[in-house]
Length: 203
Image 1 (spheres, rainbow, N blue to C red):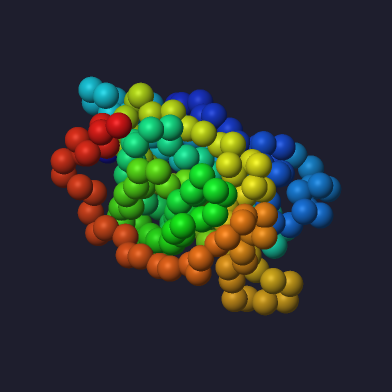
Image 2 (cartoon, rainbow, N blue to C red):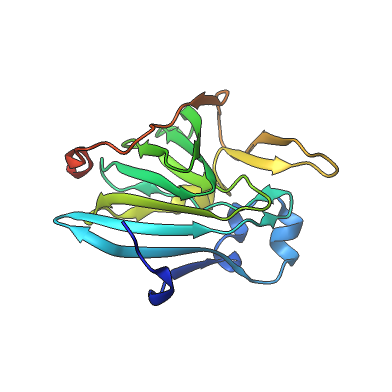
């Protein structure tokens, strides 16, 4: 699907929208406001399905890689992402009513790969590159709404992906604001988008 984004106006997520979810608190407090990523919503529609494109530039937020704010879907809606350019790490977490995380895993995806966002998992997307822009597309039910409150209250996801000062090796750091966080596991992406997307409509 060929879409000219230069003719569209995106919603923009600014640093001022994200300060509370960043790992580097000094950077979050002192850095001037700037654009962090761009969301082109509803660039295509097919029935109840909505097709969005999100562009996440390569930036370091202090010691942390640029990322989305993070949200949960209200209801049991699923979503599917496809990488159009660059690479992404998707972090999924399942929060229980007692405040603990019962499951957390990450998926590294490259251009052409797809990733399904499962029901009842909060999620963020990370651009793990210091040089390359991430562009990704998603299909989702147009009825699906997002809840950002957990990520705002807990100051981010249950893990941060960072570069320590003087290091070239990225690492995962637990967010101590969560009551209990299991060890991070890793899953593989899909090599193509599912042909039948009707599972996305089940709420």
